[in-house]
Image (tube, rainbow, N blue to C red; front, side, top):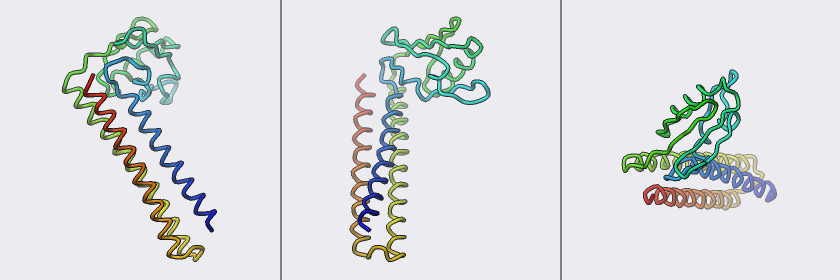
Length: 188
């Protein structure tokens, strides 16, 4: 009985950590003024009849602090990569030169900083929703165990409190990451 509940909280913790890792990856793609290959991580390219991550059709490099270079491996994919970068919502203007695409990073305006902060907020809210969904799953599993009489109400209440504490800790970490990212966006 306790082993089942331990496995449940381990699973819930692992799933919540997954939401946290996704948020960190999304945050790394929000640029704060310096070029970073992770900026282009969310870009998906229509290639060979399917949608693929940019890093599966090209190499991304940082030759200068305010410039990304994208070396497309297949010349026929250059236009698709340019379109994907332009349409990804990051406000970038890629400039093709043969199989090389230069992506200069414009200086962040106050308006763009506000947009980036809003986007960071949306990413954080998505992570909160994911964590709450995991919490809901956990609570439902505990209730199901109570209904089957594999655990008593007292044990169910104790474990529900544990799941809630785990959820609260994750939400707090998400909020801290968001504050850190907003500060990073504003100070560049």
